[in-house]
Amino acid sequence: MEIFIDTANIDEIKKYSKFGIIDGVTTNPALIAKEGKNFKDVLVEICDIVDGPISAEVVSTDTENMIREGRLINQLHKNIVVKLPSIPEGFEALNVLSSDGIKTNFTVVYTSNQALLAAKLGATYVSPFVGRLDVNSTSGSDLISEIVCMYENYNFDTKVLAASMRNSIYVKDAALAGAHVATIPPEILDQMMNSELSNIALEGFLDEWKKLPKEKRNYFE
Ligand code: G3P
Image 1 (tube, rainbow, N blue to C red):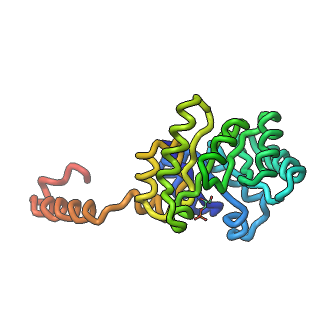
Image 2: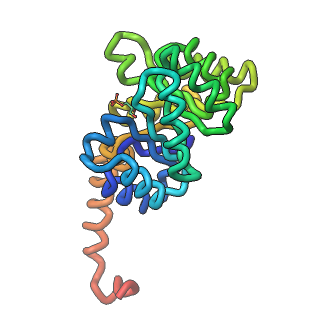
Image 3: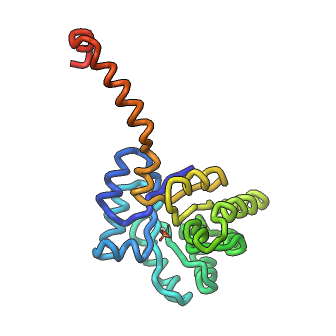
């Protein structure tokens, strides 16, 4: 499974890129606004850090302006993926931008039928919002499984990008359901790397190691 980081924060993107685990970045208007910087500057800076797909979202809700914004966003960098919302106007814009050959991420997806239509229209990624679904008493991982199954049935190239993660269990569930990508906020990447049991085990090993006379453990000095 590919791992994208779900943030527009430059320091966090730099921090987690160093681990070598980040394949791409997703942003949305709220994440960009949180940084308080110029839209274009933030995206270009992110593209300079991560050599992978970088999602940036249109902010209009009418088809014509979604297409206009999508084309402008696409010009920012070769790795840009244009995010379009799953509303009727978004489907129409997706059809046009796909014909342009522009890479797209069809977002705020809550049903497998939305994902089916997006794949038919050539979306590069679809983003089911699993965490937000769960709070509405509908299983987010069931939705991922359904979309993965549909895409396999018809050999669609569209990738399922699990979004709206709430904790590290969501990532595991997305992987088990066959998501091609998960976009993960920084704090959940931390959760994925850490286990208190790992710390306890390591502490025990190092306590024992220190009991070995110093001259017998001087290999590293
Ligand atoms: O790209 C943002 C998407 O993952 C939504 O996340 O936490 O706002 O539901 P959230």
